[in-house]
Amino acid sequence: MRQPATAIQSHFIPAEAPWSGIVRKGQTIRIVDSEGQQAVDTIFYRADDFAERYSAQDTLRTQGSAYVGVGTKIVSSEGNTMLTVVADTCGRHDTMAGACSCESNTVRFGHETRYLHACRDNFLLEVSKHGMSKRDIVPNINFFMNVPISPSGEMTIVDGLSKPGDYVELVAEMDVLCVISNCPQINNPCNGFNPTPIQVLVWDAE
Image (cartoon, rainbow, N blue to C red; front, side, top):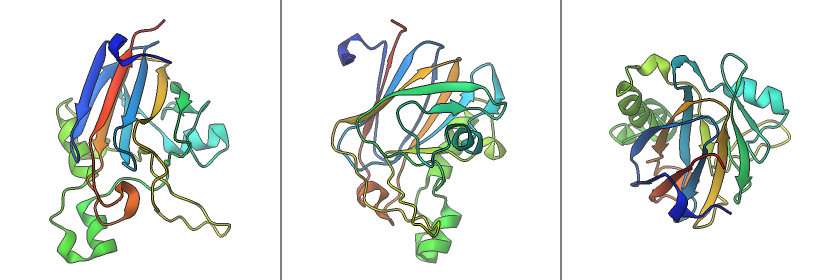
């Protein structure tokens, strides 16, 4: 198990806040759910060409599973492997339910929720720092978000399974830009109705 003291990057991301950073080929990124039951919306872009970015459809089709877990290859829009999941203490990560937005909050929870901060806002803020715009925000991974699928195909966002300190680790297969929204959603149980901080650690290749 990698020790935090040996990480070359360590970032504490407050509740509801965004973050972005470069992870180089061969490096390992660990996303830590510090207090448990916190959804972490994440998109990856190729570091030297942002036009190539995470593809939820290709990732699911390649692995033949509805969820992201150990062994999952994170596949790009060009069919290339961007990262590989190598460790996971939670066991449930969604990549179909998407990111919350002011518009979807309004439709799902009522017009009185429209003013609330949302993941789409966080993503837009972060990608704009790298010269991208709203059109560059694609369907994302929701690390630690629990979205069971019924036999009928219906999806429901329910209480998260992650405990304080649970983490997921990915090894970069190319240089990537990681963009995170530490989800601010308070209208459904993806964050236990209480958004909390997370940590991101990066280690050099061994």
